[in-house]
Image 1 (cartoon, one colour):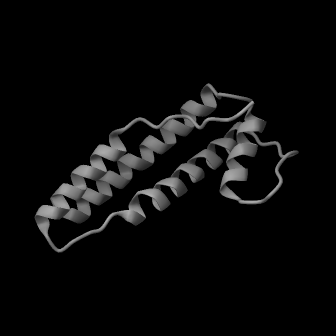
Image 2: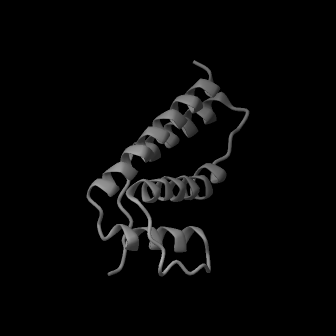
Length: 111
């Protein structure tokens, strides 16, 4: 299996995990959907006022997936280095698998 296939498989698994996590949060939200949506949008779109914004559960789930994907891309993927060493790449792949195997926690929304 090539490194490309490893990353494609990891990306596919990550996408499934994000979708499942977002669905679980919507299924048993930690707060009202309006509050959850407002918190997500305030975090993703800095400085905007979403105090009166209302969203459906489907929209909120999409916002959750977007926020998680953005956090992962900025906080993890863009910080890892790919090398010319196959041994180093194997270790990086293990790190990716370890990070992505962790269960996502639901966001903390103040009441």
